[in-house]
Image (cartoon, rainbow, N blue to C red):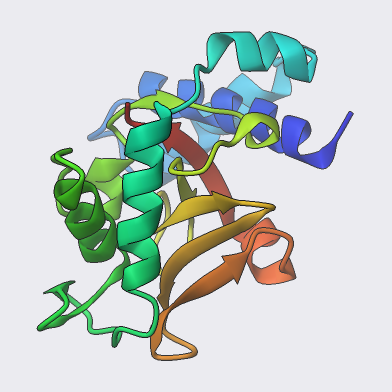
Length: 183
């Protein structure tokens, strides 16, 4: 089984556990409930064709527009809270701006953007899908736009600009949280 299919299965299992945890139960109770859910979990096995059948691709023209707008933002400065070329961008501001240019409205923050759309497995990512990572806080705290070939456009605080990231980079493998298709 490919590592991305395994990550996808774990992601779905964790998302189910999060949905079952009471939001006001406290972090320790949540972790205990998550441990109990995972302890008895039977990991379903689905091949990539089954996953692909449940995850339709983005319409070609919208994906092309999204990728074109995203590529035009490469090199823009990274600014915490930024959401436009004149301000600079943070990750969710970049995603919101790019998708808005294609006529798609998304929430402002990565965690709220993660609630939009359908979950897709890493093995069937299509250009234009959104990829999420856990970085500075638990949950979806960083987002990028998948461009194909295990690459994505995001705000790189390390580089200080909007740049292309690699899903196979150890940093991102360790922090992968999930992927969504919003069309």
